[in-house]
Length: 103
Image (cartoon, rainbow, N blue to C red; front, side, top):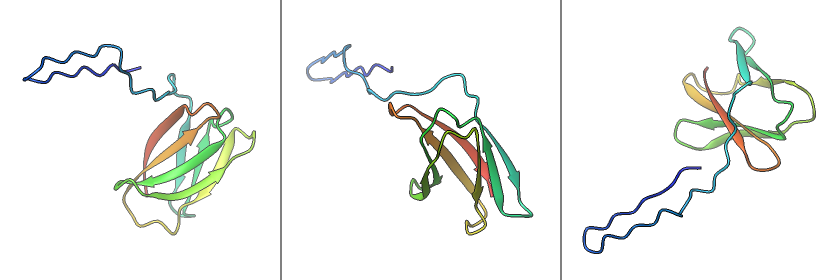
């Protein structure tokens, strides 16, 4: 967890016990394979996750779906404009993993 330290010039406020409280997944095993000819991406290593989202560079969630216990997910991205996107996979505890991909 990341600690937030606040320093206000007028009061020298110090708060070492504040945290962002956002769990994250380390040791990434998720991989994305793109097939631009078919307009699909294949995501591997998602077995521990329950939800997958495609997020635009501006932060908007463009696609969201629940995934089953499969380790492989194929997503149709043909309707997305060419550009950079984030793929976010979230588990039941709220921990997540993000990868960037290009369309």
